[in-house]
Length: 438
Image 1 (tube, rainbow, N blue to C red):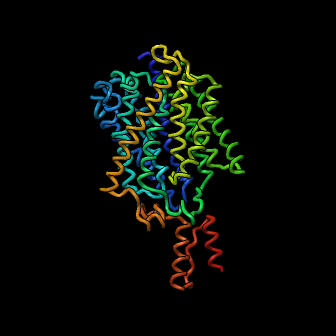
Image 2: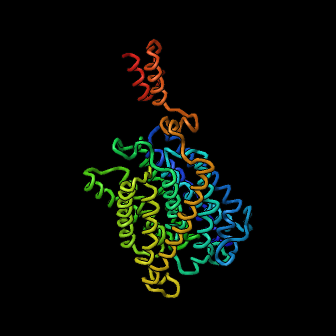
Image 3: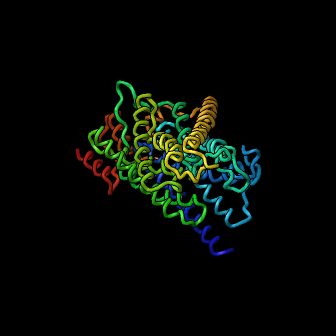
């Protein structure tokens, strides 16, 4: 093994570790944006979908996606992956993280109402069917077994604005339409549903941003001269996406809305993912700005349509992913286009990729989820939704839930002789102590 090959392998493995760290970012972001009674459930989903996606990708997902192609449609070899070179093994580990990211995008969107077992079924559908098949169409050539048909048609998606993010976003939208909104989210008596821990959300976004250095930087598939510029463009798009969302929320909502600012940065990161290797810094800035605008507009559109996305996954990953895919043709170097195509021709190729993702992922995904819902209902029962999925699905309580249960027991029994439980060293414990004194 030459020194340059060893360096490439080391960089891919470092990038793979950064991509895996993004699962921690997703977990922090999503669990902070939901109510505390559902936070444990969200974290458990994020951890479990990575377990499931890793297993499926090893058994057959990688083979379907990167195996020798059958007419550019599907991979045919590489099941129960056992790579014969260190480079191929590193490539597998890196791509396994991408599969996990595509699956976990759905988790936040459907939070607070989907049964845990149902979510595992959805994650399995993404990683076993929707993601590897579309991934083969767009990226099969990366595995050396011949190009997929979209790739052969000139479609470009450097690190996955469509292949990863829009696939997750289209699946999330399909699941939301099948599930319906959370109780009390819309209607005349609706009240805003707020996340319980915005500092945790901020930490999650920082972790995701850090992981994106590997997500985009590692997609060079070697420690090449492009890596620094790819990471620079990633930072710029995320920063200006966040600044745009900050200004927009301050203007439209008369305050700097924290979730909007966080999602603006994430939208910028999603938007630049398709073209980080072939744009200039000023283009990266514009891509981030428009991605944040697309995120904000889509958020408002979903509310008007009464589609309840708990964390903004569809605006961030789908809307910004579609924009980022089209931005390849608008801002990317024409030297990267196949056959010296013009920007107009490349727009058509990018639209073909976006439309194919819609038909395959949303169309097939929606049909499969409708079928699954008939056999195994996706949604938790009303009582479980009311008490929270932490308890209903996992039997996992929190101090505030324990306090509320004790207080309700006293109210219904009329017996106040026994004090409520006091959890020491917490704010909830201080409230319980004062309640007992009263």
